[in-house]
Image (tube, rainbow, N blue to C red; front, side):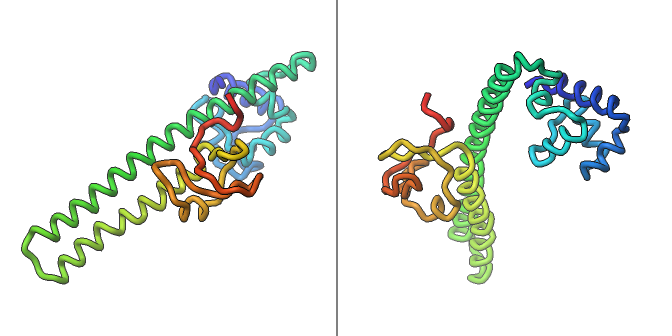
Length: 205
């Protein structure tokens, strides 16, 4: 999606509604700085307020994502294009998240290993050794919890039995046996357990 085009469209529609950036921001319970970022193409409105924004500006979400008023004859085509772009952007965002998961895992593992080596080979009091290990374990535990959260929400798990793709609950991902990103879980659709692979797309490609 062309964020600059969308930004110009938001500004045009705001002016047509005789609203200043401050007035629009107040109606949406955001800052005027946020509105300014939308209009300059530096950011997109959050999905949670997108409907409210469209209602205030008297446009459709489809028109907002197109960055222009959509003729009724081209509405379906534009809607399909926007949906495809949203799906593509989600897949790209999920890829970045999964890469960050690897980075987080490596960093916290290095921290823990460094603290264990330090406590094992450097002469110090017993209580200090315990403190050093605990200091290394805390960021490791937090990092792993956060990495699993990323793995849960980024992309989908594909059932090996029926092919259903879904986002499982955090606790299911946390406690499931796994090999890398393949986890042994129960499918919510067919109810069968299988080794389910992580995939980025919701639909078969």
